[in-house]
Length: 253
Ligand code: TYD
Image (cartoon, rainbow, N blue to C red; front, side, top):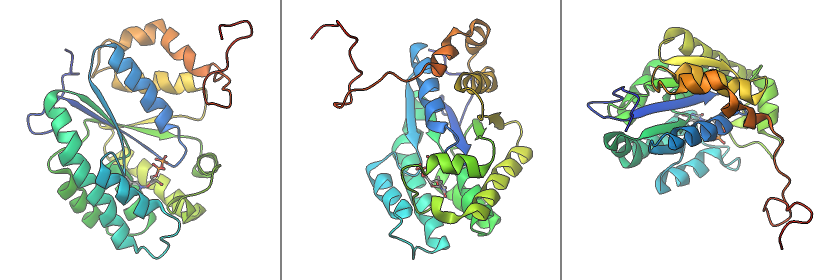
Protein backbone atom coordinates (compact mmCIF):
# COMPACT_ATOMS: atom_id res chain seq x y z
CA UNK A 1 0.00 0.00 0.00
CA UNK A 2 1.16 3.52 -0.77
CA UNK A 3 1.27 5.86 2.20
CA UNK A 4 2.47 9.02 0.58
CA UNK A 5 5.88 8.48 2.11
CA UNK A 6 5.66 11.02 4.91
CA UNK A 7 5.82 10.60 8.67
CA UNK A 8 3.13 12.67 10.38
CA UNK A 9 4.12 12.06 13.97
CA UNK A 10 6.65 10.15 16.05
CA UNK A 11 7.11 7.13 13.76
CA UNK A 12 3.50 7.05 12.55
CA UNK A 13 3.20 5.69 9.03
CA UNK A 14 0.09 7.51 7.85
CA UNK A 15 -0.43 10.87 6.20
CA UNK A 16 -2.26 13.63 8.04
CA UNK A 17 -3.82 16.35 5.87
CA UNK A 18 -5.95 19.19 7.18
CA UNK A 19 -8.24 21.60 5.37
CA UNK A 20 -8.68 25.13 6.61
CA UNK A 21 -10.46 28.29 5.56
CA UNK A 22 -13.25 30.65 6.46
CA UNK A 23 -16.82 29.45 6.94
CA UNK A 24 -18.33 28.34 3.59
CA UNK A 25 -15.05 27.97 1.65
CA UNK A 26 -16.11 24.55 0.28
CA UNK A 27 -13.91 22.38 2.48
CA UNK A 28 -16.37 19.52 2.82
CA UNK A 29 -16.92 19.17 -0.95
CA UNK A 30 -13.19 18.94 -1.62
CA UNK A 31 -12.51 16.63 1.31
CA UNK A 32 -15.24 14.23 0.06
CA UNK A 33 -13.83 14.32 -3.47
CA UNK A 34 -10.26 13.75 -2.32
CA UNK A 35 -11.30 10.92 0.04
CA UNK A 36 -13.04 9.13 -2.85
CA UNK A 37 -9.94 9.40 -5.05
CA UNK A 38 -7.63 8.17 -2.30
CA UNK A 39 -9.91 5.18 -1.56
CA UNK A 40 -10.01 4.27 -5.24
CA UNK A 41 -6.23 4.00 -5.03
CA UNK A 42 -6.52 1.46 -2.23
CA UNK A 43 -5.75 3.72 0.69
CA UNK A 44 -7.58 3.66 4.00
CA UNK A 45 -9.05 7.13 4.50
CA UNK A 46 -10.34 8.49 7.79
CA UNK A 47 -12.34 11.63 7.22
CA UNK A 48 -13.00 13.84 10.24
CA UNK A 49 -14.24 17.26 11.23
CA UNK A 50 -13.38 19.54 14.09
CA UNK A 51 -14.82 20.07 16.54
CA UNK A 52 -16.28 16.56 16.56
CA UNK A 53 -15.32 13.16 15.20
CA UNK A 54 -15.81 11.30 18.53
CA UNK A 55 -18.97 10.91 20.67
CA UNK A 56 -17.47 13.28 23.29
CA UNK A 57 -16.24 15.69 20.62
CA UNK A 58 -19.71 15.86 19.04
CA UNK A 59 -21.20 16.80 22.43
CA UNK A 60 -18.54 19.51 22.85
CA UNK A 61 -19.31 20.70 19.31
CA UNK A 62 -22.88 21.37 20.34
CA UNK A 63 -21.70 23.40 23.35
CA UNK A 64 -19.46 25.63 21.26
CA UNK A 65 -21.75 26.12 18.24
CA UNK A 66 -25.12 26.47 19.98
CA UNK A 67 -26.26 30.10 19.50
CA UNK A 68 -28.07 29.71 22.84
CA UNK A 69 -24.69 29.57 24.63
CA UNK A 70 -24.04 33.29 24.15
CA UNK A 71 -22.45 33.58 27.60
CA UNK A 72 -19.59 31.14 26.79
CA UNK A 73 -16.41 33.13 27.47
CA UNK A 74 -13.55 33.29 24.94
CA UNK A 75 -11.27 31.42 27.35
CA UNK A 76 -13.82 28.69 27.86
CA UNK A 77 -14.47 28.46 24.11
CA UNK A 78 -10.75 27.86 23.49
CA UNK A 79 -10.63 25.06 26.05
CA UNK A 80 -13.73 23.36 24.62
CA UNK A 81 -12.12 23.28 21.15
CA UNK A 82 -8.90 21.92 22.66
CA UNK A 83 -10.78 19.31 24.71
CA UNK A 84 -12.56 18.06 21.59
CA UNK A 85 -9.21 17.97 19.76
CA UNK A 86 -7.37 16.09 22.54
CA UNK A 87 -10.11 13.45 22.45
CA UNK A 88 -10.02 13.19 18.65
CA UNK A 89 -6.23 12.86 18.57
CA UNK A 90 -6.03 10.11 21.16
CA UNK A 91 -9.17 8.22 20.17
CA UNK A 92 -9.01 8.42 16.37
CA UNK A 93 -6.13 10.30 14.72
CA UNK A 94 -3.15 8.65 16.45
CA UNK A 95 -4.42 5.08 16.00
CA UNK A 96 -5.31 5.79 12.35
CA UNK A 97 -1.86 7.19 11.57
CA UNK A 98 -0.26 4.24 13.32
CA UNK A 99 -2.27 1.90 11.03
CA UNK A 100 -0.95 3.82 8.01
CA UNK A 101 -4.23 5.52 7.08
CA UNK A 102 -4.63 8.86 5.37
CA UNK A 103 -6.39 11.16 7.83
CA UNK A 104 -8.29 14.11 6.37
CA UNK A 105 -9.52 16.66 8.87
CA UNK A 106 -11.91 19.53 8.22
CA UNK A 107 -10.23 22.18 10.41
CA UNK A 108 -7.50 21.68 13.01
CA UNK A 109 -4.98 23.76 14.96
CA UNK A 110 -4.74 26.57 12.37
CA UNK A 111 -8.43 27.29 12.95
CA UNK A 112 -7.77 27.80 16.65
CA UNK A 113 -5.00 30.29 15.95
CA UNK A 114 -7.15 32.10 13.38
CA UNK A 115 -10.44 32.14 15.33
CA UNK A 116 -9.43 32.20 18.99
CA UNK A 117 -6.13 34.15 18.76
CA UNK A 118 -6.61 36.46 15.75
CA UNK A 119 -10.42 36.58 15.88
CA UNK A 120 -11.16 36.65 19.62
CA UNK A 121 -7.87 38.27 20.62
CA UNK A 122 -6.54 35.55 22.97
CA UNK A 123 -2.76 35.23 23.34
CA UNK A 124 -1.32 33.55 20.23
CA UNK A 125 1.49 32.15 22.36
CA UNK A 126 -0.97 30.52 24.75
CA UNK A 127 -3.12 29.17 21.90
CA UNK A 128 -0.01 27.60 20.34
CA UNK A 129 0.84 25.91 23.63
CA UNK A 130 -2.74 24.71 24.08
CA UNK A 131 -2.69 23.34 20.51
CA UNK A 132 0.53 21.49 21.23
CA UNK A 133 -0.86 20.03 24.44
CA UNK A 134 -4.02 18.78 22.71
CA UNK A 135 -2.11 17.35 19.73
CA UNK A 136 0.17 15.06 21.77
CA UNK A 137 2.94 15.17 19.18
CA UNK A 138 0.71 14.82 16.11
CA UNK A 139 0.85 17.52 13.45
CA UNK A 140 -0.47 17.80 9.90
CA UNK A 141 2.10 17.14 7.20
CA UNK A 142 0.11 19.26 4.71
CA UNK A 143 -2.65 21.83 5.12
CA UNK A 144 -4.85 23.10 2.32
CA UNK A 145 -6.12 26.62 3.00
CA UNK A 146 -9.18 27.22 0.83
CA UNK A 147 -9.82 30.88 0.15
CA UNK A 148 -13.19 31.73 -1.37
CA UNK A 149 -13.04 35.34 -2.51
CA UNK A 150 -13.44 37.31 0.69
CA UNK A 151 -14.81 36.36 4.09
CA UNK A 152 -18.15 38.16 3.58
CA UNK A 153 -19.14 36.18 0.45
CA UNK A 154 -18.25 32.78 1.88
CA UNK A 155 -19.84 33.56 5.23
CA UNK A 156 -23.08 34.43 3.45
CA UNK A 157 -22.96 31.06 1.67
CA UNK A 158 -22.27 29.22 4.92
CA UNK A 159 -25.11 30.81 6.84
CA UNK A 160 -27.93 30.32 4.31
CA UNK A 161 -29.58 27.89 6.75
CA UNK A 162 -28.94 30.01 9.86
CA UNK A 163 -25.72 31.05 11.59
CA UNK A 164 -24.16 29.13 14.49
CA UNK A 165 -22.57 30.87 17.51
CA UNK A 166 -19.17 31.35 15.82
CA UNK A 167 -20.62 32.48 12.50
CA UNK A 168 -22.48 35.22 14.40
CA UNK A 169 -19.13 36.83 15.29
CA UNK A 170 -19.60 39.70 12.80
CA UNK A 171 -17.77 40.93 9.70
CA UNK A 172 -14.74 42.42 11.49
CA UNK A 173 -14.24 39.18 13.46
CA UNK A 174 -14.33 37.10 10.26
CA UNK A 175 -11.91 39.45 8.53
CA UNK A 176 -9.43 39.05 11.39
CA UNK A 177 -9.88 35.27 11.15
CA UNK A 178 -9.13 35.30 7.42
CA UNK A 179 -6.08 37.50 7.96
CA UNK A 180 -4.96 35.01 10.63
CA UNK A 181 -5.12 32.14 8.13
CA UNK A 182 -3.23 34.10 5.48
CA UNK A 183 -0.55 35.08 7.98
CA UNK A 184 -0.13 31.42 8.99
CA UNK A 185 0.29 30.49 5.31
CA UNK A 186 2.98 33.16 4.91
CA UNK A 187 4.75 31.86 8.03
CA UNK A 188 4.65 28.18 6.99
CA UNK A 189 4.53 28.06 3.17
CA UNK A 190 5.88 24.52 2.99
CA UNK A 191 3.04 23.02 5.05
CA UNK A 192 0.17 25.44 4.38
CA UNK A 193 -0.78 25.70 0.70
CA UNK A 194 -3.32 28.33 -0.27
CA UNK A 195 -5.87 27.33 -2.91
CA UNK A 196 -8.39 29.77 -4.44
CA UNK A 197 -11.87 28.27 -4.31
CA UNK A 198 -13.91 31.09 -5.83
CA UNK A 199 -14.12 29.62 -9.36
CA UNK A 200 -15.25 26.27 -10.79
CA UNK A 201 -15.16 23.34 -8.39
CA UNK A 202 -13.13 21.31 -10.87
CA UNK A 203 -10.44 24.01 -10.95
CA UNK A 204 -10.26 24.08 -7.17
CA UNK A 205 -10.02 20.27 -7.00
CA UNK A 206 -7.20 20.29 -9.56
CA UNK A 207 -5.35 22.90 -7.52
CA UNK A 208 -5.82 20.81 -4.36
CA UNK A 209 -4.41 17.70 -6.09
CA UNK A 210 -1.49 19.74 -7.43
CA UNK A 211 -0.62 20.73 -3.86
CA UNK A 212 -0.67 17.08 -2.74
CA UNK A 213 1.02 15.44 -5.72
CA UNK A 214 4.39 15.21 -3.96
CA UNK A 215 2.75 13.05 -1.27
CA UNK A 216 0.79 10.86 -3.74
CA UNK A 217 2.71 10.59 -7.03
CA UNK A 218 -0.28 9.00 -8.91
CA UNK A 219 -2.04 12.35 -8.63
CA UNK A 220 0.22 13.69 -11.38
CA UNK A 221 -1.47 11.24 -13.81
CA UNK A 222 -4.95 12.37 -12.73
CA UNK A 223 -3.86 15.97 -13.27
CA UNK A 224 -2.58 15.18 -16.78
CA UNK A 225 -5.71 13.21 -17.66
CA UNK A 226 -8.14 15.74 -16.15
CA UNK A 227 -11.35 13.66 -16.56
CA UNK A 228 -11.66 12.95 -12.84
CA UNK A 229 -12.28 16.61 -12.07
CA UNK A 230 -14.97 17.30 -14.68
CA UNK A 231 -17.61 15.41 -12.66
CA UNK A 232 -17.49 18.15 -10.02
CA UNK A 233 -19.02 20.71 -12.40
CA UNK A 234 -22.01 18.55 -13.35
CA UNK A 235 -25.27 19.80 -11.81
CA UNK A 236 -26.42 17.61 -8.89
CA UNK A 237 -28.97 14.92 -9.80
CA UNK A 238 -32.56 15.91 -8.97
CA UNK A 239 -33.85 14.23 -5.83
CA UNK A 240 -37.43 13.18 -5.12
CA UNK A 241 -39.12 13.84 -1.79
CA UNK A 242 -37.76 10.64 -0.24
CA UNK A 243 -34.22 11.98 -0.77
CA UNK A 244 -33.47 9.37 -3.47
CA UNK A 245 -32.23 10.40 -6.93
CA UNK A 246 -35.25 10.93 -9.22
CA UNK A 247 -35.81 8.04 -11.68
CA UNK A 248 -35.70 8.74 -15.36
CA UNK A 249 -39.05 8.53 -17.13
CA UNK A 250 -39.64 5.03 -18.36
CA UNK A 251 -37.20 3.60 -15.81
CA UNK A 252 -37.98 0.53 -13.71
CA UNK A 253 -40.54 0.70 -10.86
P1 TYD B 1 -18.57 24.11 11.16
O1 TYD B 1 -20.04 24.10 10.98
O2 TYD B 1 -17.84 22.80 11.11
O3 TYD B 1 -17.94 25.19 10.19
P2 TYD B 1 -17.30 25.01 8.77
O4 TYD B 1 -18.26 24.19 7.96
O5 TYD B 1 -17.15 26.42 8.29
O6 TYD B 1 -15.99 24.34 9.00
O7 TYD B 1 -18.28 24.81 12.56
C1 TYD B 1 -17.04 24.92 13.11
C2 TYD B 1 -16.87 26.34 13.60
O8 TYD B 1 -15.95 26.36 14.67
C3 TYD B 1 -16.35 27.28 12.53
O9 TYD B 1 -17.05 28.50 12.57
C4 TYD B 1 -14.91 27.52 12.95
C5 TYD B 1 -14.95 27.31 14.43
N1 TYD B 1 -13.69 26.83 15.03
C6 TYD B 1 -13.00 27.65 15.91
O10 TYD B 1 -13.42 28.78 16.19
N2 TYD B 1 -11.86 27.18 16.48
C7 TYD B 1 -11.37 25.93 16.23
O11 TYD B 1 -10.32 25.54 16.78
C8 TYD B 1 -12.10 25.09 15.32
C9 TYD B 1 -11.61 23.71 15.03
C10 TYD B 1 -13.25 25.57 14.74
